[in-house]
Length: 301
Length: 284
Image (cartoon, rainbow over all chains, first blue to last red; front, side):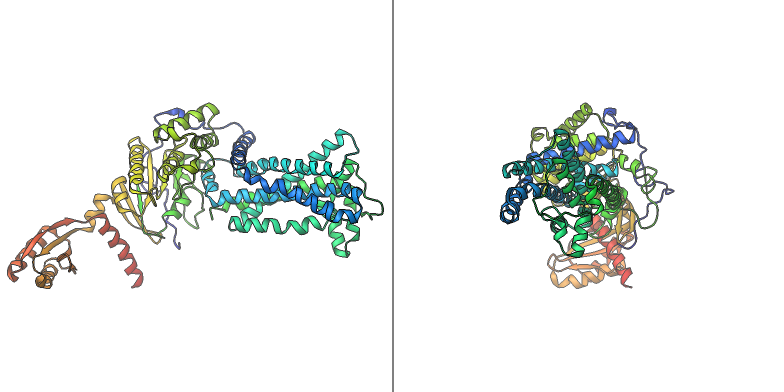
């Protein structure tokens, strides 16, 4: 449309003001005017929306299939197809952390697809016309997707235990590892949100959301030693957060590389935990901002 | 308040601006005295919206849909439950409250969508083509629901491309075309502005052309001739006088008429006249 309809406030009767907003007959229907402080408000709104997403999961469990089957497929493929020529059980213990990092990365697509569907079906528009915080809808999505991630990681851990992986440290370290995984998953989810917001529909979002994950997860020390990769790829692998997440988990679980495995010595490899947390925080900061900005101007497709 | 216009006139765009889904390219828009660009949050809490395509969550039940919206509008848990129950019974959905909205019929979905727009009792409710794609029965249902709302004191902005709908539901009608307001007023005012029409049914087909000439002379307008119905129709600005002149002309030429009279313009005539005129102006 070329010329927008202009409804000026100084018109005698601007839209909707023929009748001043008088209290409705049943005042119990009116929303509480000022709702608590803004932080509690965003938390409450996000929680309501997250619960809605969880109801979706419960009623359409088919949504979960890919998150539950994918880790098993990769565990089989990499653990046994390649694993036997790369060092058997010792290799499988080593690659287990890479497998978790990859699983976490792939749950991003779940966020992308879920949000895309809401955009396609106009649900996002419905929520956008409500007086709720702009970040709440996105935050509700990323928090409910942590559940999916937990399910995925649980499957991966079961596969790992069956393949012979064992943590060699105390429960404290293992718990720290799990927390790190959740933080990383939350960060990855925000990338998924952004992908959903910049793509035209759920199909495109679905394929675009997956395609970058293959190089991102494989050009790392997740499954192989980054040191054996050719020049530039080796540098990418050394600084890839997937590598550092896998390395951090290896350290926390006390899994050492199989004998004869070359190890990288870049700064991230020296401080994998710190580097991973740093990357996660950076990703959350950047993609929360980008997504919220994008969401403000985005309507239905 | 009805907003009437052909496809692509800008109805939905306006609705999106009012509901803060789109930002206006230029100009200022106020809803209940609040600017949509400067205080979008306040505008959002004053507006309830039901879209052209029902946006209810098909996976959630009817109750859960309304409960969620009430919670998001800042209502406490217990009150949200009551709000949802009240609305469900008002829209005769109590019996299906526990069923997933995806399994509802088109009419039920639309009623739920309307109910969703009313959560939190907003003073202004925007309905964007609420009956597009509904069967006649569901349409009547929706009309009844809207009528009740208006009777209850809610201001409703209704967009539609159905003239009958605007005629029936709207106190004031704004006709827009290509993003511009082309007319504004009550249904009666719009019809009166379009003027009366002189209508005659001729007995014999061979007298049709003569009758058309008589009508043209009487009204000064180019008459529309429907050969099959043997009907001649022309806009008559000065109604009664034109009828008198037409009778005289028919008498003089000896034309038999079965029926002759003045008829008030329908909203159809208004609409086609206005939007057609706009198109001609553009072409000129």
